[in-house]
Amino acid sequence: MSRNHTRLDAIIVGAGFAGLYMLHSLRALGFSVRVLEAGSGVGGTWYWNRYPGVRCDVESIDYSYSFDENLQQDWQWTERYATQPEILRYIEHVCERFELGRDIQLDTRVKEARFDEEANSWVLHTDTGERFEATYCIAAVGCLSAVNPPRFPGLDSFEGDTYHTARWPHEGVDFAGRRVAVVGTGSTGVQAIPLIAEQADQLYVFQRSPNFSVPARNRPLDPELQRAIKADYAARRQAAREAAWGVPNDKPPRPLEDFNAQERVAVCDEGWRKGGAPGMLRAFSDSMTNPEANRVVAEYVRSKIRTTVRDPAVAEKLVPTDHPLGAKRLCVDTNYYETFNRPNVTLIDVASTPIEQITPHGIRTRDAELSVDAIVFALGFDAITGALLAIDIRGRNGASLREKWAAGPRTYLGLGVAEFPNLFTITGPGSPSVLGNVIVSIEQHVEWIAACLAYMREHGLDRIEATTAAQDNWVAHVDEVARGTLFVSAKSWFMGANIAGKPRTFMPYAGGVPTYRRICDDVARRGYEGFALSASGSLAHSPV
Ligand code: NA7
Image (cartoon, rainbow, N blue to C red; front, side, top):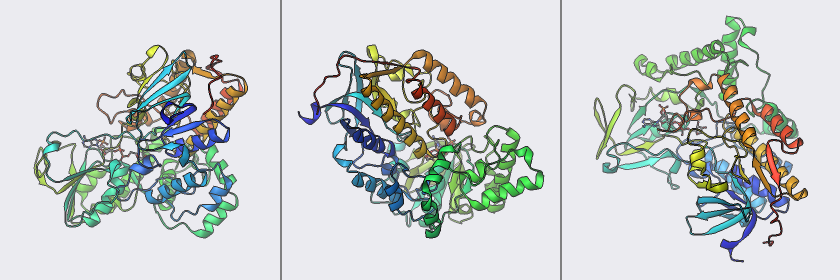
């Protein structure tokens, strides 16, 4: 059989953390699988994002696979928060260690996926002109992989260099002696700006809205600490699975009302000193549900910005006032606010002086034209649904996923979609996904899907589809849970608010990772309740 006419058990789209573990799991169960990956290497978001300062904002000891004891014992992380090159080395190591490469086809972008009811299979067409067929299609396309491109008028006329942080040149960029603009101050901009400022002659930071950022307090990972964690890694992993956002708690947070005014400051001080997002986000157990608890933490961070940035006018522009802390993903930085004390850094408030035009020599705002040699766009992603909807996905009776989701994504558990049989999404909308440590969520989804396919095979079944009723209930539940939190009060990418025309709906499941896991496990235990399972009668296809 030629490789482009192979009928497989499953095709996985994407070779990031999710796709790789899915491949490993299904292969171990004896399924025939192939991964199709658009990039020229594995790693997903860690393959594409190579901008200066890029590192994970979850501690490396937790942001890694837990499925293999030898792997987690052997791999040595060097820093508290791993850099992109280190994470990519880790992913490549996993690939080699489990010999995943032979089932991965790189440089292959899936353009179209169509469910053939009669054959009970997904037929995928790629930009390489190939056609693939499989009983199951598993989308492991990533929540942060569809780039939000710059759409400024005049962009094409710019005579200098432009870069998007999520499509960074592999050979790196030298900004020495150059005048540089960075547009965007989300997690990416916040990581890149301090390093670009150190190199560039002059740096202009174009900020549309300020974000909260907390110090990472990154440092080399103490070998003793790493040894101690590894001595009982299983316990740490279990603690991560049981923590609301997939990151183990040092101690369970308590609600604001448990503390007097002085103690509240001490709790914030402790989080700030420790560094990283969890210390501030979970300063109080009700930080994301009680506006007053959130205000206490937000006010604390605002005061830190004001004391760090020497020019009060600049400080005020950097202080976020339009959203609760954490309602937009909390940034984690190294010297971000300090960077605005440098003489070669200027903050441009795009909210009051919007970018009107990119000119051949720079950027013109309503107030001025700034000449620059390079523009770095750190504009983020069409998050959570963008990469999936970039594929023309057609389910039963030609149903189009784009059309079905025109008013916002609708899934059952973020795993399945009604009218799209045998399609699974890893960390899809309606699952906790990006709210916390995504690796914990990925592992949970992969293990659930693998167990589901094994169950189906065991029971002579080969078709699974979420029922519309189960999906409707889940969508309503996801919405209801979100409305009980402060997440819905920010114009965030969680809400689709960063992309013009995208429906505004809170996409992740905010009920916490352990609750969600329990629900998924219960669904499986009850024979995949909410899914319709059947045998198509076409089980006897030829093995590959
Ligand atoms: P984000 O968090 O979406 O940040 C994008 C930034 O770009 C943000 O400051 C935006 O301002 C800004 N932006 C977007 N469009 C424009 C236009 N047209 N003009 C000016 N500024 C603009 O993406 P990141 O890549 O930083 O981070 C994404 C996630 O990756 C992060 O949360 C981590 O989980 C990893 P806005 O705030 O929308 O006003």
